[in-house]
Image (cartoon, rainbow, N blue to C red; front, side, top):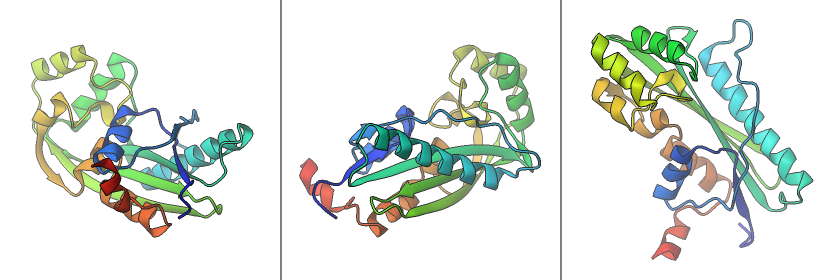
Length: 207
């Protein structure tokens, strides 16, 4: 990889940024992509996560090109979808939506899909989709109402943040924890390293 190559993160999520920083990846630019995240008719959770991550990456690349920021730049985007069966849960902004999510998740298992999309400086597009499974305890009315009052759920896929207070609801987890937070680190590092972005080599630069 050329020394001047840069990384553009197509996200405003402090969780995704923090996860990348945890493994020594410091994006040069943050270029959040505002897109319509409404599922298409009969669209399945896997397909939705994949499509949205791709659209976010492409939108961020277009924006970077207009600002002449795209030269030698990698563009990284991700999207997380929570589903019970084929039912896709929203990223609620209203309390009634969040309450509905918690009632649906209470005492049962659900799946969390995160798709990571990388566009290389050469214009190649690579993607990985990761699935994790989570089971919640049966939530009491007080637990649900108190959690709703914290506002931690707002804008989160499925109406909860596993890295926060809702971690107390998790009975069982199968798969990648960082996938549930919003950026599966192993798969993201594999994508970046595989396309020439030196994640591991940069660790020594942080010392």
